[in-house]
Amino acid sequence: MKYVVTGGRGFIGSHFVEEALNRGDIVIDIDKMNYASHENLPWDNHPNYTFLKADISELEHLPTCDVLINFAAESHVDNSIKDTGPFIKSNVLGVHNLLELVRGKLPYARPLFFHISTDEVYGDRSDGSFTESDKLTPSNPYSATKAAAEMLVLSYARTYQMDYIITRSANNYGPRQYEEKLMSKSITSIKEGKQIPIHGDGSYIRDWTYVKDNVSGILSIIDQGIKNEIFNIAAENHMTNLQVVGDVLEWFDKDESSLMFVENRWGQDLRYSISAKKLREIGWAPKHINGLYKWF
Picture 1 (cartoon, helix red, strand yellow):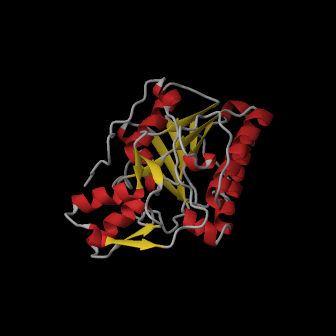
Picture 2 (cartoon, one colour):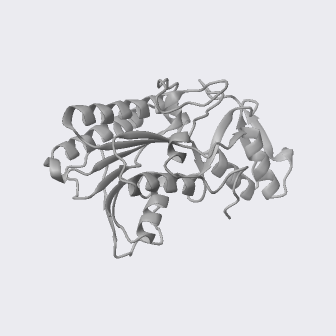
Picture 3 (cartoon, one colour):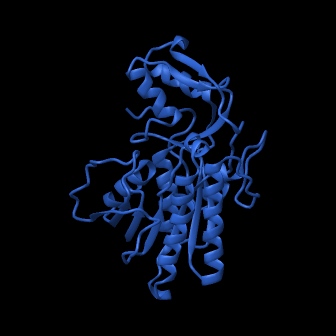
């Protein structure tokens, strides 16, 4: 299999690239190298790996491939609230440009357009779990741009007969995650002797999914040749922010004096929950469940 991967130097994208190379696949990695990208990775000199530095919103040529998988995105909610511009450029205009590049190829040469989205496009809910057919009600600029990108993908698929897959993953955690996210920020804060900042009262619930389980879900879909579907990917491992940082404190033998409660985020969603039943029905199952996995 030959992949073009966008955002392959980032968090989830780098784990996909690593696994694809381990399987013997060919990877062309396109990344603009922003603040969350990794400068040096163990596979930089791998014979099946090629790196191209480029912004997806400005890309002029798409290399030939079987699957174009788009991980590239601005993804930090707090940053989207402060300045929506970069999120519009990357998450909407960037996706539009990729779709145009695929559309410009002859039909037989068009790759599968595999778009990585997020559970945040659904918004929050007090109970139950969202399924793939539920209405999208994003509640912050980041999730709104991801929902807009999905609409573009679906519209191009219908209008121009382009094959696609969309996955909506729950909160990912694991190695190589930039420290602006709760889990990585908590670990970094403890290592540096700082307090862990907690928004509001820490009661907000998220579904915590280990990054390698997300990647295995993506590959399960690709391996089975599935096209023109949407899948949720989630370990269905629900924890409050306080429970998450509580685990981190336990890992490092620290107590609650290492916590610092800060002003709540604007428009904070209370609870995210998605059902991965559809993905489980094709044989996928997460390996890291029942609490957080300590990977280090």
